[in-house]
Length: 299
Image 1 (cartoon, rainbow, N blue to C red):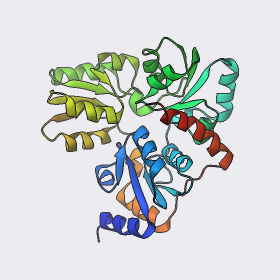
Image 2: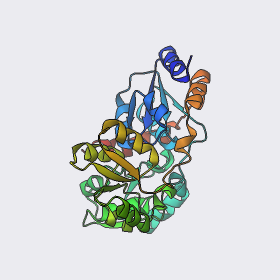
Image 3: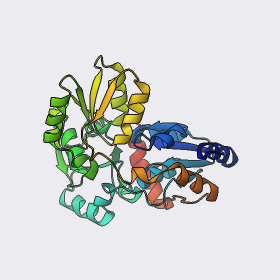
């Protein structure tokens, strides 16, 4: 029996659903019931009827699933899959910043712990950051924790956006020079980058998009060649959905070690042992859910 066949067997036995982020390995994406970006997966987890949610991603995503579907058992596909960006801010630090800017609404990127979300007014993703900020009545916004995404959002609003100095190491490492060099190699290509990239990288791109938005752009664009500035796992769904088009990574450094910790073997082990259960304390979960629900209400 192959690992994929064993996963399907265990899925039936556990009454489980498997969700995977677009950055996961191709073989992991293939065994998932749902794949997508953080916003899409959050929406999927709201309506899941399964007893068990196997989350192939990183810890903050599994926490979000646990918050949104408290009746389900949420299993993280690898116990050590964390997020360096989420780790840049904790509750004591956020409280200090809130004291510094008492009039500001706290907009927390979903790449944060449930405890940090619980201290925030509303969440956002890379797909809806500007929409969330513009929907708030506040004139000042404390945007946490990604400074690059916050800067990108700030270009789409007339509100004062205060940037917390966190960043995603994978996206922040992409340089403007790498984009220029790639454009020389593929002069007719469209350049699509993630909003977690540096401002000078975004300025050189044709579009800054979440992963779900990249898929839509590539599908609808008449272009045949694309240069991609996000985690390399994204190449798989792009190529799968657009077999007649070319997709090239802007830099070989665009690999998230934590996303790559999950393998079919770790998924099988997690399901067999029903281990790596992710839970959120009830009080924290209730407050975090308010911030997430406010985000989900904005279309």
